[in-house]
Image (cartoon, rainbow, N blue to C red; front, top):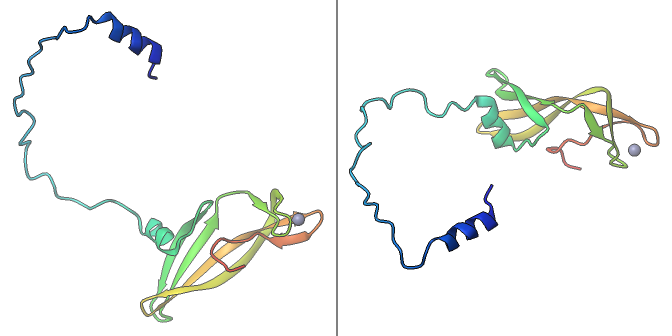
Amino acid sequence: MFDRRAARAKAQSTPPGSFSSQTSGGLGWGVGLSGGASSGTVGGMQDFQLYQQILGIPEPWRVKQVTLNREARAVEVEVECTETVGGCPTCQRRMHRHDWERRRWRHLDSCQFQTILAADVPRVACAEHGTQTVAVPWAEK
Ligand SMILES: [Zn+2]
Protein backbone atom coordinates (compact mmCIF):
# COMPACT_ATOMS: atom_id res chain seq x y z
CA MET A 1 0.00 0.00 0.00
CA PHE A 2 0.91 3.62 -0.33
CA ASP A 3 3.04 4.82 2.56
CA ARG A 4 2.56 8.51 3.22
CA ARG A 5 5.67 9.00 5.34
CA ALA A 6 7.95 7.20 2.92
CA ALA A 7 6.66 9.28 0.05
CA ARG A 8 7.22 12.53 1.92
CA ALA A 9 10.77 11.53 2.92
CA LYS A 10 11.54 10.70 -0.64
CA ALA A 11 10.21 14.04 -1.88
CA GLN A 12 12.29 15.96 0.65
CA SER A 13 15.45 14.13 -0.27
CA THR A 14 15.25 15.57 -3.76
CA PRO A 15 16.77 19.05 -3.81
CA PRO A 16 14.42 21.70 -5.16
CA GLY A 17 15.11 22.84 -8.67
CA SER A 18 16.79 19.69 -9.84
CA PHE A 19 15.43 17.88 -12.80
CA SER A 20 16.08 14.44 -13.95
CA SER A 21 16.74 14.40 -17.63
CA GLN A 22 15.29 11.23 -18.99
CA THR A 23 14.15 11.81 -22.50
CA SER A 24 11.52 9.34 -23.35
CA GLY A 25 11.88 7.80 -26.72
CA GLY A 26 8.26 8.18 -27.61
CA LEU A 27 8.09 5.89 -30.55
CA GLY A 28 4.76 4.50 -31.59
CA TRP A 29 5.46 0.94 -30.74
CA GLY A 30 2.69 -1.46 -30.11
CA VAL A 31 0.47 -0.08 -32.83
CA GLY A 32 -0.65 -2.37 -35.55
CA LEU A 33 -0.63 -5.78 -33.98
CA SER A 34 -1.46 -8.68 -36.20
CA GLY A 35 -4.85 -7.88 -37.63
CA GLY A 36 -7.85 -10.04 -38.35
CA ALA A 37 -8.10 -11.64 -34.92
CA SER A 38 -11.42 -10.09 -33.98
CA SER A 39 -13.72 -12.95 -34.92
CA GLY A 40 -15.51 -15.23 -32.48
CA THR A 41 -18.39 -15.00 -30.05
CA VAL A 42 -19.29 -11.78 -28.39
CA GLY A 43 -19.20 -11.58 -24.64
CA GLY A 44 -19.93 -15.13 -23.59
CA MET A 45 -22.78 -14.20 -21.29
CA GLN A 46 -25.08 -17.09 -20.63
CA ASP A 47 -28.77 -16.90 -21.28
CA PHE A 48 -29.46 -17.63 -17.65
CA GLN A 49 -27.51 -14.62 -16.47
CA LEU A 50 -29.36 -12.55 -19.00
CA TYR A 51 -32.68 -13.71 -17.58
CA GLN A 52 -31.43 -13.06 -14.09
CA GLN A 53 -30.84 -9.44 -15.02
CA ILE A 54 -33.98 -9.00 -17.05
CA LEU A 55 -36.18 -10.39 -14.30
CA GLY A 56 -34.24 -8.55 -11.63
CA ILE A 57 -33.52 -11.56 -9.50
CA PRO A 58 -31.04 -10.67 -6.76
CA GLU A 59 -28.67 -12.79 -4.72
CA PRO A 60 -28.82 -15.34 -3.18
CA TRP A 61 -31.26 -16.45 -5.87
CA ARG A 62 -30.06 -17.51 -9.25
CA VAL A 63 -31.60 -18.70 -12.46
CA LYS A 64 -31.01 -22.42 -12.76
CA GLN A 65 -32.83 -23.22 -15.95
CA VAL A 66 -34.91 -21.58 -18.62
CA THR A 67 -37.40 -23.66 -20.55
CA LEU A 68 -39.29 -22.46 -23.57
CA ASN A 69 -42.66 -24.05 -24.09
CA ARG A 70 -43.70 -23.04 -27.58
CA GLU A 71 -47.11 -24.69 -27.48
CA ALA A 72 -48.10 -23.02 -24.25
CA ARG A 73 -46.36 -19.84 -25.37
CA ALA A 74 -44.58 -19.69 -22.08
CA VAL A 75 -41.09 -19.32 -20.78
CA GLU A 76 -40.54 -21.06 -17.51
CA VAL A 77 -37.66 -19.75 -15.48
CA GLU A 78 -36.46 -22.08 -12.77
CA VAL A 79 -34.89 -20.17 -9.92
CA GLU A 80 -33.05 -21.63 -6.97
CA CYS A 81 -31.87 -20.27 -3.67
CA THR A 82 -28.16 -20.70 -3.13
CA GLU A 83 -28.34 -20.05 0.58
CA THR A 84 -29.25 -22.64 3.16
CA VAL A 85 -30.29 -19.98 5.62
CA GLY A 86 -33.49 -17.99 5.36
CA GLY A 87 -35.30 -15.35 7.33
CA CYS A 88 -38.59 -15.87 9.13
CA PRO A 89 -41.03 -13.59 7.27
CA THR A 90 -42.57 -12.45 10.55
CA CYS A 91 -39.64 -11.75 12.84
CA GLN A 92 -36.85 -11.63 10.23
CA ARG A 93 -34.74 -13.92 12.38
CA ARG A 94 -32.45 -15.98 10.23
CA MET A 95 -32.47 -19.71 10.62
CA HIS A 96 -31.54 -22.84 8.80
CA ARG A 97 -33.79 -24.14 6.08
CA HIS A 98 -36.39 -26.61 7.23
CA ASP A 99 -37.77 -27.86 3.93
CA TRP A 100 -39.05 -26.60 0.59
CA GLU A 101 -42.28 -25.51 -0.94
CA ARG A 102 -42.77 -25.63 -4.70
CA ARG A 103 -44.18 -22.35 -5.94
CA ARG A 104 -44.85 -20.63 -9.24
CA TRP A 105 -45.40 -16.99 -10.15
CA ARG A 106 -46.58 -15.25 -13.22
CA HIS A 107 -44.01 -12.65 -14.11
CA LEU A 108 -44.41 -9.84 -16.59
CA ASP A 109 -44.71 -11.34 -20.02
CA SER A 110 -41.91 -11.06 -22.52
CA CYS A 111 -43.44 -10.32 -25.92
CA GLN A 112 -46.35 -12.71 -26.41
CA PHE A 113 -44.85 -15.31 -24.14
CA GLN A 114 -45.95 -15.82 -20.60
CA THR A 115 -43.10 -15.71 -18.19
CA ILE A 116 -43.44 -18.13 -15.33
CA LEU A 117 -41.09 -18.13 -12.41
CA ALA A 118 -40.79 -21.41 -10.57
CA ALA A 119 -38.80 -22.15 -7.47
CA ASP A 120 -38.44 -24.42 -4.54
CA VAL A 121 -38.80 -21.80 -1.85
CA PRO A 122 -37.08 -22.60 1.42
CA ARG A 123 -39.28 -22.90 4.47
CA VAL A 124 -38.03 -22.11 7.93
CA ALA A 125 -39.42 -23.47 11.16
CA CYS A 126 -39.52 -20.52 13.50
CA ALA A 127 -39.99 -21.43 17.15
CA GLU A 128 -42.39 -18.53 17.56
CA HIS A 129 -44.14 -18.23 14.22
CA GLY A 130 -44.20 -21.75 12.95
CA THR A 131 -43.16 -23.08 9.56
CA GLN A 132 -43.32 -20.48 6.83
CA THR A 133 -41.86 -19.95 3.41
CA VAL A 134 -39.24 -17.24 3.24
CA ALA A 135 -40.04 -14.04 1.41
CA VAL A 136 -38.92 -14.02 -2.20
CA PRO A 137 -37.68 -10.74 -3.63
CA TRP A 138 -39.77 -10.81 -6.80
CA ALA A 139 -43.15 -11.48 -5.22
CA GLU A 140 -45.25 -8.66 -3.86
CA LYS A 141 -45.65 -8.52 -0.13
ZN1 LIG B 1 -40.32 -15.88 13.47
